[in-house]
Image (tube, rainbow, N blue to C red; front, side, top):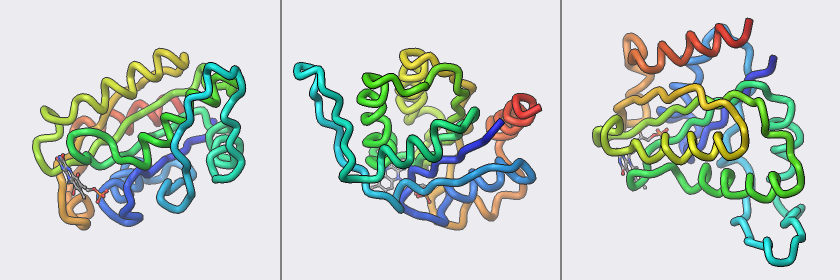
Length: 178
Ligand SMILES: Cc1cc2nc3c(=O)[nH]c(=O)nc-3n(C[C@H](O)[C@H](O)[C@H](O)COP(=O)(O)O)c2cc1C
């Protein structure tokens, strides 16, 4: 049992980071800020049958060191133009290459945190769809989304309690961690 929180925000101590910390209070975990690493765009090399296997950036290191050993992975992203951030999108695009050289995605549990200023529970549902269908494809178990309305970097820090969707997600993580 190993829990990994992946912060897809360029704000290392913004709402996504704070929400991840609060969600996982007293639950041992590792945090990864994607903004701390270099991630190159995915290249589509399917025609050549050669994996991208790009060793000029940090992607393979992140997958081997953090993603592979994790059983439960929380993906956190602010809403950017009604989708996920570029950091998380590029990271997920690269999963296709990992899949093509047999990375062991299957069986991992994925949870999603979405933080936006403009009715994210209505206007940012595409992020949940993208992650859910990607999980289906990679045979990972999608365990749900916690959605929060927040904008200024301290907004989530000032919440008295977490929204119900996040409390439910925390409960699932705790149950799965047993
Ligand atoms: C480039 C950019 C685009 C954004 N686009 C949206 C959007 O489409 N919908 C929305 O609800 N919030 C949008 N926001 C607001 C952020 O989602 C919001 O400020 C969020 O709390 C930031 O989380 P963070 O502190 O973890 O970075 C945008 C912010 C930026 C910087």
